[in-house]
Length: 318
Length: 286
Image (tube, rainbow over all chains, first blue to last red; front, side):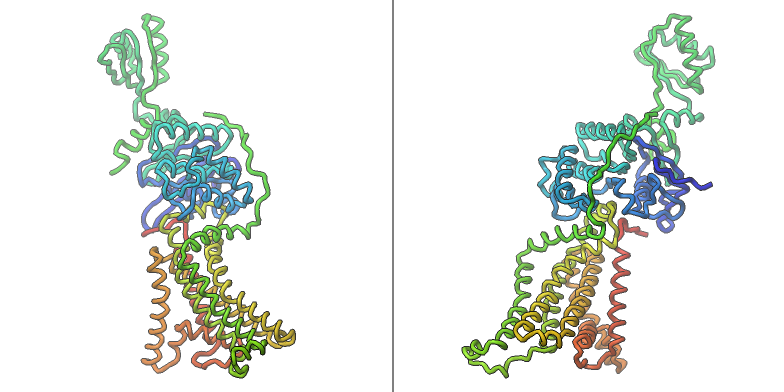
């Protein structure tokens, strides 16, 4: 069945891309709604290929792509609505940051005064006003990331595709960028971000697409993805005053397959097949034994853990 | 999962015409061109011939000046189609030099810096990109070929009288068409080299080298096979044949006019194919 282009989503329908005999991505079908979607995978997994296909810079070998109902093969229709920040520092020679932004806005059809005013506003937004009149060739890595982001957001796109936008940024700048992404997502913009910084991906993403060797391994809300992974027992961290007693209760009720008591005897890490039943058991244990529970939280339902389970700590290399 | 309301406002202001957007590219390219003092000197030098030609036209119509210079008007070169044909040949040569210096620096820096994805992730096509880059050469070469040529023609018409212009209207057409053919070919050729050779100096040298090489090869073909077919790859010969026909002059008959046009067309198609292979957002390396 063919997917119908949706004006509110980015849709990939059975998309494959081959570079000669080399696989880029294979039979990818996705429907990405507004909000922040993170694309996670090891180097060479096909993240950039997927982004280039969405932006029409590459043509799929098979399948179809629609971005808000538009085909990427129509740049004149697509790019007024889409901003793309590539991972490579690619800039025309000899221009200052301001000139670069103005020229790109004018390619979008903005008049000279409007382009100048918007360039200034965007430079302020990404914190680059002081370096605006310096040549881009002399920018630091962080400044280059900022100007690339400015180029992607300057024309008010509805869809932002950002390839490794956090690379090379210091922690403060990263925090600023993440805040900017959240603010944009809150305004209903589609953000597709690829990143290797998994804990930050985890903080901001509404959903994650895990990709490895050109295949989509998992997609959706990361907790829902984790729930689907039955072959990996859930790890739950409990801090309480009687970890030994709790461990005995866990095995007594057959709710755990492995328990590790912390060295300080103030908590334990439980591996369980069914988290929901474990939580119910915890409720009973607290009521019946007077257990003083400081906190209880899942320990492996973040992007990092899911990435480790599905792709492997070695990045999926055979 | 978060729920997001569409609250952003997209730009609702007036947009410039789509057809005009490729002209954004030459603006910054010209800044780069005029940064070179040598290129400015060459550009100024390319007006020496038009000035000399204007002086000749002026002298033709000013007996006092001729008397002062003690020159007989009969010794001055006649102002006719040969006069403007020579003008076009000289200016085309200067244009070749200019495009060898400017052309190679137009696309190669963008390719070397991977800047093409930046341009092509705008509402901007590959054709518009090439047109934008080409317009740099078109504007520069126009400024030294058909524009001064037409000005000289107007000067002559003004001094000689309107009837001269009417009876020599073909010269105006030949000047414009002949210049445009040369400009388009030269722009395509230098942009192709710029796209394929990343080092601009090498690309500039290749522009000279390739044309000399094919001329030499053409001569070799003529000698070995005792034919004139080698002239078909000799661009100067091809252009001379085309220009001669445009100015209604007797050509040297080495190649037929139809063959000259076909040869020129083939050169341009090859250049376009090579350009389309290189001007891509991403180059797939197999």
